[in-house]
Image 1 (tube, rainbow, N blue to C red):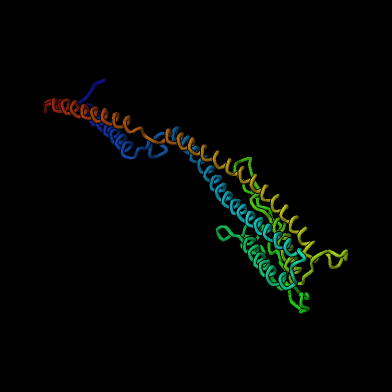
Image 2 (image 1 turned 180 degrees about the vertical axis):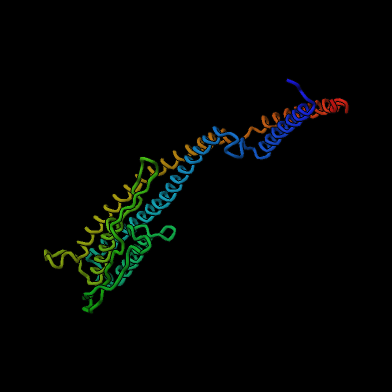
Length: 318
């Protein structure tokens, strides 16, 4: 095969262009600290990187869900804890009211007023919200769980006056919300207000009415005995037990969420490390390769220049 001068020039130019392209790629790699810019640069690494990024997005989604769930359950635990404190105080008031040394006025005015304030506080706690969502309303998270309204029937207070008592209504539903913390792990997010709180507030209202009416001890009358302080004390103690049970259950699930969240963070760190191995450039190695390539390019330029300049006009004319 005859090697012409034009072939030698073309080959030299091609070598310079190839080495310049390699130099440019290494410069881009060092400046961006990335192994590749396009999938076509390194299909194998790019495929692995895309797979890892997809896994990381899934992990981020589970992690975000775990964080929201943890905040929700923590708020539920705080609310139930406050209701326990209200229950203890209400029971103390009822026990005082059962003391025969107090008059009807003392029960209705002093103790009754405080009991009503406890009812208002319990309603407020029952309507606890997280990020504008009411946590005890079941699926009806955009609606308050409880409201206190006038009863359709009246009662007679300790002085014989007719008064309108309050009743509590539950405005939520029976929805139980599940949240996924992983491919095979889910947790029940919410505590239903109708199960954990409604009965407690109703017992507070009964105790308040008993104080207002000065109904103290049971008399074996099936009609009036459920409306006495003695009966309301039993109801309050039962409600406290119920609240404790739901708080314990919520606490167990909260620990599950915290464990899952910690595990997700660990897996995210490991996945990011693998992704970095596939995508990121080792700066020291990248600079060394670039320096070597620049040296090679300069050598190619010098050799090509000598080869081309050595050709005479007569060589081109042959």
